[in-house]
Image 1 (cartoon, rainbow, N blue to C red):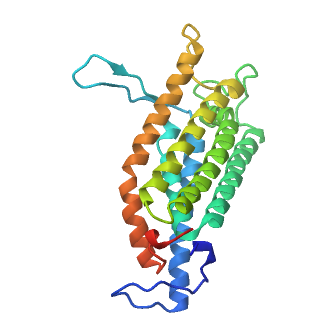
Image 2: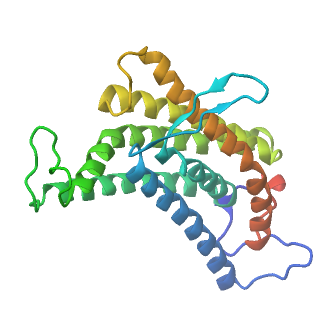
Amino acid sequence: MAREDLLPTEQHGYDGLAELAPAELHLRRERVFLVLAGVFLGTLAILNLLGITRFIDLSFTIPGTSVRIPMPLAVGVLPYPVTFLCTDFISELYGRRRANWVVWVGLVLNVWVVAILWLGGELPPQVPIDAATGLPPVGTDGRVFFVIKQLTFGAVTASMIAYLAAQLVDVQLFHFWRKLTRGKHLWLRNNGSTLVSQLVDTTSVILITHFYAGALPIKPEQPLWGQLFGFIAAGYVFKVFIALVDTLPFYVGSRHLARYLRLPPPTASSG
């Protein structure tokens, strides 16, 4: 039975667990949904604000060799895999409709963040703005806000397009694998959906950020596509690593939450 087909008070029986009163069952399910949606939306807001405000270098040398693997990452990438873990949990526990709904709310949140930054930039400044840079003079009040605003605006379009495409791909593939495997192989739908959607996201956000916003730290003396591929590869490798790491928490968490919410076990649901 698909999660969205469950009645609000319908519950699955588990050995050793007492049946819950309808009000308690509803409260549990809504609280867990609120936490998952809250973490998802809060993480989304953080990564949109941090975005490309700083690039970090996680490059490493392969042990026993002199081969160095470059890994330049925007700081906004660090919390991003959490959003896919949250939508996978919501997909597994509450169904496709609720997962898609949260994705669309996230898009609205993106617009809200941009609107606040725009409004803050349009209100009368305390110090004059340099027309050439669009920033207050160095060392003056408000310069940090305008720097963040410039960087956020530079990447937000890329972020919104990539986010929407990747999250919808993630939800659709999650349920595709769930249906194909008849609700079995939880690890497959978790990783299979996330790995593809992360590639969509990483490629989209890097290409759009560069070609539309021109906001990547590209070195003009080096080949362009080599640098773009480096950014894509670094971001994707990081996300793949995190996706593999979160398989166990997702697997264990889904089973425990299904029991706690009195939902059918993940391997018994046909989606």
